[in-house]
Length: 503
Image (cartoon, rainbow, N blue to C red; front, side, top):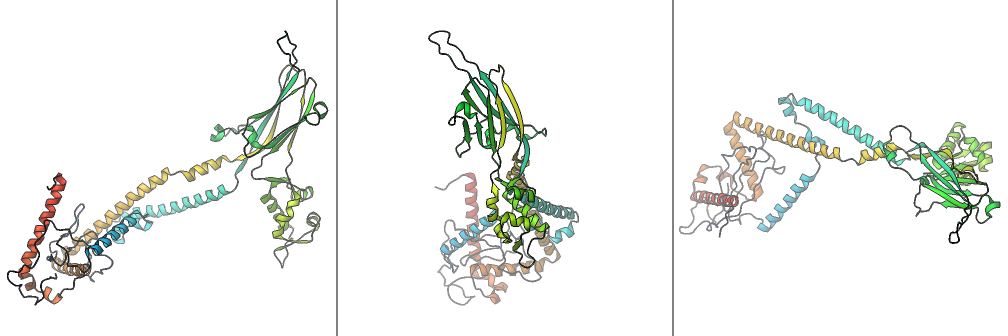
């Protein structure tokens, strides 16, 4: 250990009557503990002390002896003496030390929040050699890694699948009913009579597929399947301005379960109902020539382009030298009006050949004078979202299993950390048991070297290695000061635990 006193010879006693140290404060501040880190390489052939062992720390005004009686830390116990003094011996000021301590604390808190990696779960090879049963844990760790990779791959597959439209075909049953209301003559002067009239209703619902779909509880409105609905009545009966009833979807449209039309009349009426499905994504009707060539009548744009590309590959129409060009055969030449075109031009050339899809046409006859309600049913195919899509979304959004897995991972990390600490303690005791004297000597040398590096103190190793150095008068005062500080520190801790405050 180094010392600080008035300039002179190292072994010279101070001037009589002049105190070597300032009077001790009522309770000195604790000195900075330290632990050997990566910045202090250990001595070769000498095992490191446990990572959480606190070596002796001191400053220049409170020299203390080497930690000869230190023991390795046990659970709930931190070894190492913590001296304290009045400060002032370090080259760095107290403000710089406070800043450094605050930075270290922030670094430790940030590191604690980081997610631990899989490598932190692996047991050291020495532990596996000492405990053969630990190989079962390593096998489980390997299986867990494969399982995590499989689950992650499946999650990515599901995410990619959700990006594509997932549709399934269902039957939509349309009910078209009409009711006739005969005319009424007024029974008295105050009552008004009514003329004959009829009412037409268009309703519908999805048919159950019998598979126990859990999403059937969520009923879709009838109007949500259509983009527009037009009811065309007899123009001769209702004139050119009143023979059409139209409904078109807008951004502010409120969905409804059906449509109804009421008109006066006592004659039979023929009406035509036009239903245009709301395709999601949009579908187009192909030009008749292109439809016959590709075998596609109404489809989405990507499907149409894919079918055209399959036709080009099947008939080997791609140019052998300039691969971006397509040599049109006689059919494509008639349709596109060119002998050669680039593949990138296909979407633009397809636009004139794509038309809105045909509406569903239903002819209905309204019979006047019928006493009962008349109903007709029609089934049409519609595309709805696949029920598997909701299950995929629920799987991706579920966090219950993730929280449980994170909790189990935290327990595994704690257990592995405990095992590593016990391994360090075992190596510590084993090295001490083999050669206690050499072990303590090497440890003291290593601790002293680290202490000097931490406190920026340059001592005289040649003097400090001799026993006479520690028999000088200053050692008695240093020991007294140290114990005085420790007693005050323990007293403060006891008063704090008992809730006693000094006046």
